[in-house]
Amino acid sequence: MRRIETVRELRRWSEAERTAGARVALVPTMGALHAGHLSLVEHARRRAERVVVSIFVNPTQFGPGEDLDHYPRDLERDLDRCRAAGVDVVFTPGVAEMYPPGGQTRVEVGALAEPLCGRSRPTHFGGVATVVTKLLLAARPHVAVFGQKDFQQLLVIRRLARDLLLEVEIVGAPIVREPDGVALSSRNRNLAPAARRQATALVRALDAAEAARAAGERRRDALLALVRRELAKAPDAELDYAELRDPETLEPARERLAGPALLALAVHLPGSEPGARVRLIDNRVLEDPS
Ligand code: PAF
Image (cartoon, rainbow, N blue to C red):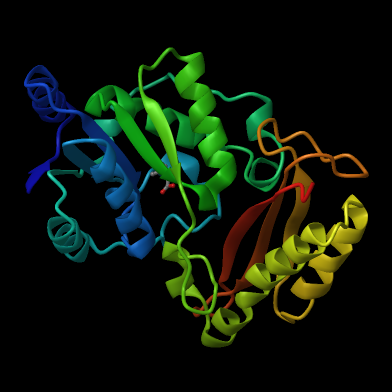
């Protein structure tokens, strides 16, 4: 496995692979790799002969007062995990490599970036879109793989690849869960022990809504009431949002659901450091039982 730290070297490597006829896949990450990321690598390996994992904690997607400084970092362990997973290249640029000093250009995303996480994190998707565009231009992959846990992010990236005429296939990989159902996230390790136990409320809320929808419930507000009831069982959870939306456009769901609907959740739970809060998200597409 090769470690590359500059855009120039990554581009050279990718171009040589493409010229030799290899398909290249990119898995963008912010490190602190867990089994969820490794499943993205697996998806990438199925679709390409060469896999690049980027590890870069992107400062522009964190708002003021968010957890940039507390975002978990463990590069040596990440490199070991990538090696064991058969990754070909790990791209670990510094901040100045991705954001040359004096930079003035950003990628701005429209309506898809406004609801859900965009409402409480108004600069987040602009930062994600900017860094992902740069990573795609640097690695020139045929395919790039992202987790469906960040469902809105996946839609934003699909849209930016289309809008900016980037020739790349964007693949969404299913959410990987702990044995108790909690979606894997690098932030889980920052939860206080009692909060970690309460984190199961998110998946229970998704399960309850899915079961009700499968049994024929189509009233949006009844489904959301069910979700809030389940979330209320986590006494320390503070709701950011629980919403039903169109899984392609993110338009709000109608009063009576017709067709698949995205149920998206975000809550804050206490972190292990005094006064810290950890924001967890989860989602599921509720299929139309008919
Ligand atoms: O999902 C993430 O880890 C990040 O948002 C991404 C896509 C690597 C961009 O920094």
